[in-house]
Structures are given as structure tokens and as C-alpha cells.
Image (cartoon, rainbow, N blue to C red; front, side, top):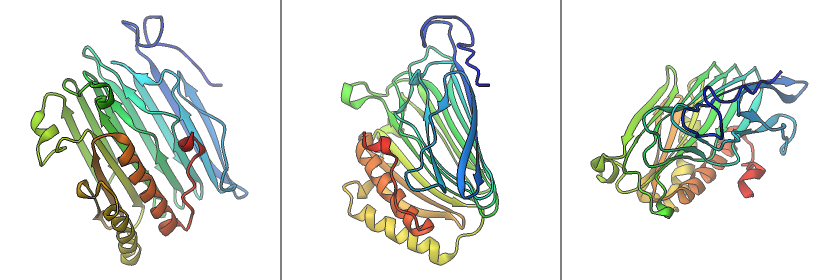
Length: 294
């Protein structure tokens, strides 16, 4: 049965002094008689809402909810996803993941996904927001068996430009990995003006977006080149074309990156390119989760 142990220590509302939330979610997707179904269990304030099938039985859409809506120093979100052969899951969130200011302890979100042969995962959470003064780590690892394929994105916003709160203190570390295929890891210190504003860094932008398509085997040259051609055409028509690009990181991994001053334009570009790759590489329409239009 699901368990909700509450804070690791202390009491009171989330974020109170001395209180640390530890939350875990385990979700397993299986293909049963043509329908992808999910079994899941949780500990603490992290869970899946009911399964949705807006495009038929083969693809299970899941919404992952973290009721406290953010992490303070010492909080941990531990997310484990497994896909059995032939299963296809799309996971998203109803809102941003917020990493709040910390007096020292690290806040951490860990995602570990394992894809069996012939399975497909779409990992599409809304943006992560690094608040001024946060001490945070956001990491995701995707293990792909031969024949498995992944579409995943990451959007990170630094500070709250609309509220005049610059990311001028704290540290945010990001770790994205497909073991044996691709690794991207970096840390941004709020006091590092050269990295934030330099031409070889964020160049004054405060949102970083990454879209990845990866396979558990070598992609054919024709498939790779067609996918890159189409997203490059989309990038060229976008206002962010000077700060976006797509490349083949290696024979099994396609990567699109974009910098933007705020989240919304980067998010629009990633959604459009996700839909393009979904259609080209999987022959599926870009069926956006209903939450994205609310």
C-alpha cells in the first residue's frame, strides 16, 4: 500500500525550519493485450494521477504530482521508472519544479528510468526553477536496452526575471545521462557573472532548454539526417534561432539546445520540435498532454 511518512524530521508546514521531505515514486509500465498499463507506489508527497489514453491504448499518459510544489534544502525526490518490453509511457507534470533558497543543505531530484527492448519513454516535465540562493541538484539517468527509444527534455530557469529576482547567489547542478551513450553535467554558481553573461556561457539568457532523442541502438543515417533537417528548419524560423541548434551527439543520440531570456519561448520551441521528432521518428502525432493547454 502507498505510504506517506511525512517530513524526515521536525513538523509543521513544508519548508519549516528543521523539516526535510523525502519522497519516492516507483512506476512500472507494461504492455497487456495492446494496452500500456502502469503500477506504481509512493512514499511521501509524490504520486501519479490516474492513467490517461488520449491517443489510444498503446500510449499511457501519466501526470506526476508533487503537492508541496517545491524543494527546500535537504528535500529529496527519488523517482524510478521502468518500462517493460513494448510499453510506451509519456510522463509530465502539472507545474514547475521549484528549488527554493537554502541556508546550506542540498535539495535533490533524482530520476532513474530503465527501458526494456522495444519500449518508448517520453519524459516531459515542465520547467525547473532555480530560485536565488538555492543549493540544488537535478539529475536524470535513462538506461536504454537494445530497441528502446527515448524522447526527453529539460528546461531550467535561473531566478525570477519577471519578479526582478536575479539568480545572484546559490548553486544549481544538473546531471543528464544515458549511460554508455551520452553525459552532460554542469554547475552554475549564482555569483559566476562570466558564465551567466559571457558570450561562451549563457550570454545573458536565464533559461536553458535541452531536447534529446536517443535509441538503444544505432540510428540509420537517413533517420538521423531527416530528423535533424526538420528541426533545423523549425529553428531557423524561430525568434530564438541565434541561440538554438541541433546536432547528432553520436550515432544513437540527437540533441537540441536552446537559450532564452525566459521560459515561454524556449518551451514553445521544444514542444514544436518534440512534435516533429515524434511524427518523423515514431509516426505519431504530437499529441500534447491536456495539462499543457490549461
